[in-house]
Amino acid sequence: MIMTRARWVLLIMTVAVLVSVGLLWWITTEDDRQLDRHIRQALEGYEQAFAEEGAGATPTPPRRDGYGPLLGTPSVKKVTVHRDGQTLTAEFTGAQTTGPCGADYTAQAVESAHAALIVVEEHPHERGSSWDCPDVGYRRQVIVRLGRPLGERVVLEAMRGMPAPVDLMR
Image (spheres, rainbow, N blue to C red):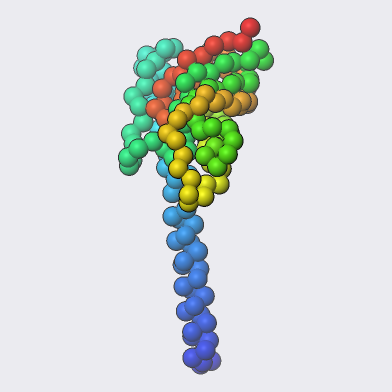
């Protein structure tokens, strides 16, 4: 069967659209892939340090690809473990809570045998082009629930992959 010119054009346009969609997906998910690599390196680094040094191990910070902080990942300053041992409150410096310069935050824990790594994700509010947001940090916190009690495991913060200070709720 011989393809007509219109069918060739339609086929080429379909392939171009599919390639464009695939490329757009690849570009827009690069930050997620970078964060996943960083988390994996941080947990593997701590597990290796734990195997060599035991409890209280000091891991080597994960290798960074690129410059600057991980996008949308504030550094956890302190963690409070609730009485149930599975609920954690992570404190960090972030944006204000309201207005176009504000942000909301969510957190997740990625757990291993000897560590629980807390990843805080920033969700900025809609900013108009005329907004000049101040470079001021606000004390913020999020709550995250572990899959199992923390026990003797260490809590790692995602930015540096290092242990975060931990307090027990009384």
